[in-house]
Image 1 (spheres, helix red, strand yellow):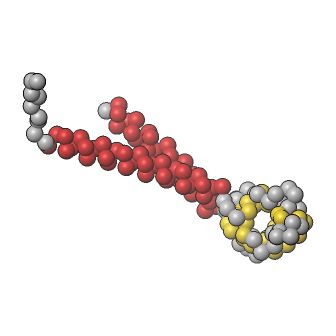
Image 2 (tube, rainbow, N blue to C red):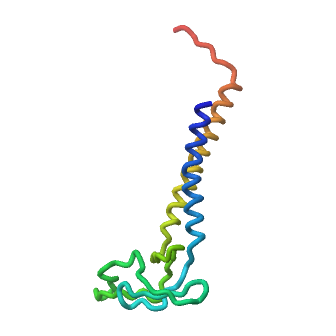
Length: 134
C-alpha cells in the first residue's frame, strides 16, 4: 500500500506542476511587438486592442547583432508572450517549458508503473522454474 501511495505522489507532483503551468500559460496572451526600436521601450497590443508599453524579458541588454556586426535592439514584428501580470517574454513563454517538464514527468512515472505492472503480471503467470543442483 505504501508503494502505491509513493507512486501516486510521484505522479501527482509533476502533473500538478504541469496543470499550474498550463493555467499560467492560458491566462497570458501572445502579441506582436509594434514598436521595438529602443531598449526597454517596446509596445504591443493586448487582446482588447489597447497599446501596452514596457520592457520585454529575453532581449539582450546590448541588443541583437546583425550580420554586419552592428548592434540593434529592434524587435518590431517579433512575437512576445505576455503573462497575466503584464510581464512580456520574447519568443517563448516560460510556462511552456514548465508544461513540458510536468507532463513528461507524469508520463514517465505512468510509463514506469505500467512496465513494472506488466513484468509482475508476467512473472505471476509463468510457471515456476526449478532449481537444479550442480
